[in-house]
Image (cartoon, rainbow, N blue to C red; front, side, top):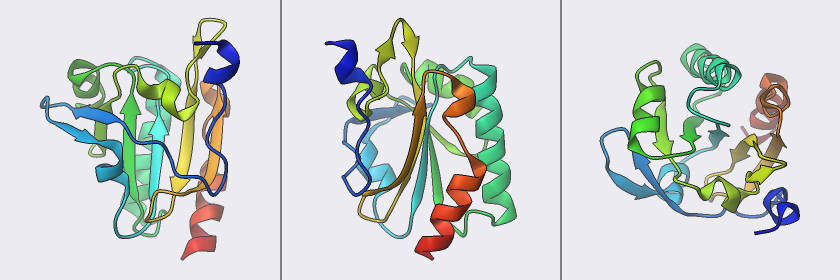
Length: 155
């Protein structure tokens, strides 16, 4: 797969691609099962289960959810890897955490110059992308302000 392909994220208004994910208990499901239905969903794709900046973003999302700042939107955290990586993250959060295997690339978050990209997507109830932010630098792949503003427009 070319590097150019791996950095093309879904456009605003497009559906977030679906693929199989695994939770911390080794249960398989689809990303669509976890992100579609009633209301909006914030999906955060971690660069790695061990990335300290990504883990800080997960803590921020958890605090936002607990305070009501997300207006009831679901939060789904996706880490590269499998159940072991999902467990490593799930131990420190109440949010739903899944492993994507190597499917980060399916949402445009592949590797570029050996750096795994991370990103945040805000989806409507049908799985359409309302907002997106992606980067090889985890500090640039998340914006609390962008999430709040996008969700405020949809409620």
